[in-house]
Length: 350
Image 1: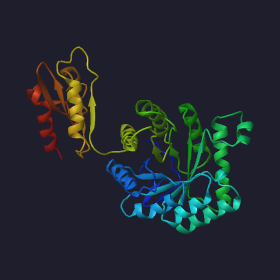
Image 2 (image 1 turned 30 degrees about the horizontal axis):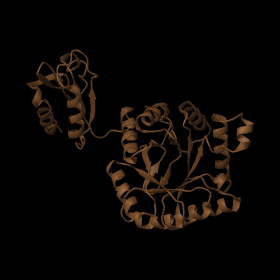
Image 3 (image 1 turned 180 degrees about the horizontal axis):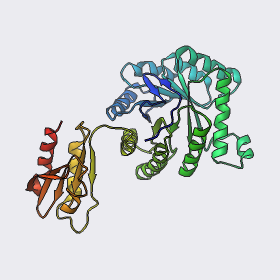
Image 4 (image 1 turned 135 degrees about the vertical axis):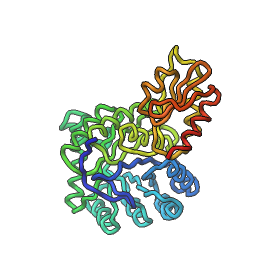
């Protein structure tokens, strides 16, 4: 799949951009200063294979907490800073790996310059974040409201400010809750610069709706070669953001890890309890780290035939079922033994 070759920057021990893997990010929803709770949540995110975590820094206590939190985790931390440049400086002092700021709301040029100089010294990258709700009035007036032009050129102003200070370790986000607007904005920015882009649909909503909106918007952009990091913004457990992000990458062939389960939607031909079998299979197979495709199909029509590209699978019958590999039947077993026998066969695979 085509992917735009962007500038490479560092976020801690992660390289972002170029042909480096697309990073999946999330954000803690604990109080950053609650060190134990923050470490616990980040470890859960690490277990889900989160690559980078962002944390809100609202006061000096939050910034100081970074130093202790970093002793217990292995992924980089990005400090999310709003308005107060001193919090950016304190976060850098206490070992943060990256900043997320909007230089336009930091204040005087000298404050931005102080942040940039500190980032240069510590080799810390900056993510410029422009959301559809935070566009400067002059751009709203110039481009007739909120649209891809007001979004992109508002971000370009921030980019130009950092470049004027000789700073180029930049990545950019242009998040909107409106999916078409986000797609247009990121696409336009991709044409104008080669800085890495952090993709997201902001305020996407509760789990089901948020996953749909994020999958459509982020998936479209990734499929056209745009994007170097992603975050799925959900109102819920941040671990679900990571799981969703990784599944989006896997569905596009941009991430090869773990097994993939495919299953049919059921119909009148289905003679086994396919829905419960699939749910149980997801739970029992979730920790198997083999890059294989597993098919769980409701009948022989959708089994070895339509699912022959699967590495291994099962197909239901009337109280009995088939286990097959690459479209070839391996054995016939009773329905109640289908899943157990499938797992035995998976365990034999390299």
